[in-house]
Image 1: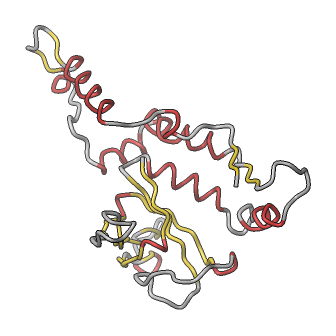
Image 2: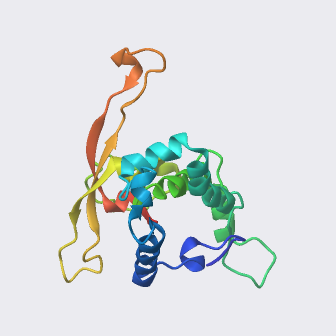
Image 3: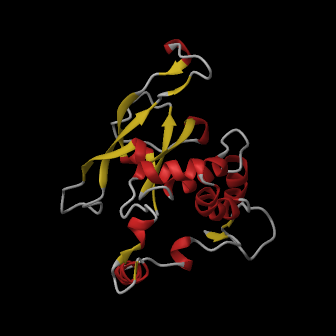
Length: 220
């Protein structure tokens, strides 16, 4: 399967490693001090040395520059849908390509709209998840054990790090997923109401345990 897109991924265009992190820390140590290290610019201007996730989200919601920095790249990337092919030797549409067009590009699924939102909220923290709601009759904390048809997907919902906590990790050293998240605790609801404070007009807040097979985990 070949994936083509005109926009390079962040991993390909700007690899992150320990050297990058060390260089940034060293740079900050140089630019935040003046007057022979007697004046700390972070203190003078009231900058937070270690902003919290809530502070990042607050700036994203209220500051135009912060919103553009986070949103510009994902919006540009996903504005051009990827071209997915499995046979470049023919111009005829293969069965696989037809399934992709009929399902992934479906207006009902709105996959790329949700991927755009997921990409943006991932940039607000360290990671994000796309929860895939399916009609398999199982509790979300149970593994998704069967192959899905596109009609089995009930909804897609992106969540930022603010609403997601990793509950358990894979501890089996014989597993290929050793050290990776096994289950997540996702907080849902807590919104709605509009101009009224009536509890009946709001989506109640609740938490649920979700198995890793039911989410797509993305990292910044």
